[in-house]
Length: 91
Image (spheres, rainbow, N blue to C red):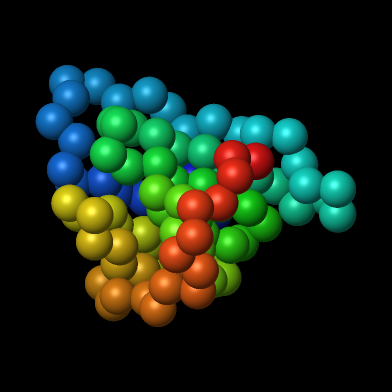
């Protein structure tokens, strides 16, 4: 679980992946999480905003399932629209 979301990264070929990390909260108090199980998948959840590999995918709702498979991002088994594909700075 990353915050309130199940995050699955299917293209990491590691025996064990690091656990999600809780980062400092945003100034408005929203929680920030980082999950980087392998070098090809960096998942950031800021508040409920989803960022994968620097691309913004919009806002999640509690309980959404995020899947990252070889660069393809799915939320609840559907491809979300990319909101911003310009690389975002790390939190």
